[in-house]
Image (cartoon, rainbow, N blue to C red; front, side, top):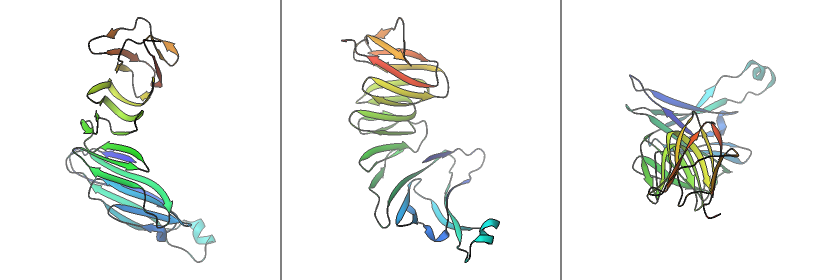
Length: 242
């Protein structure tokens, strides 16, 4: 879960609420808080910012509960609070479930403007300075968040995405996409232009099943440009050798 708060004139506290039935189910911590029920825990790992305050807060009972439940059990909510410091605040909480007492299979480390890690074998990274470019492994991007393996990338809200120094995607609007093989599944909030890398001129490019006519390919940069008129869809790039 990624939440971004942008202060205007004054810094503020930002508080996230995680609701549960009973106050006794909540266990708070600086790095991880838990909500445990029936032998299983929802682990809420506080990955960013570095300093957060988590509390188990008692909440009032509803009238229906007062009438039907005896004896009453304290109800509660987990609150996670952080403070802005004159810049956009990124609050990142990774949610996993385990058996009670089992440590989540998650590791993370802080980088220059980002946090990266592995959750149950899946690599991830997210920006702590929104809109700024960060580098993790062979990847360079200004995405809000990414996850990937050797043949797949999921990229959220990026205008630039590079791998091994090659610009694979460049967009004039924030683009969220999945890139695998010859297909790009995308979503965006407006129309815009996207530049895509291809080692050779594609034999055809389709957007939502409709072929692009008169596709222009830049042999020097090894890219082609397309206009996205739909806010979501699939781009299929057919290899020039086929």
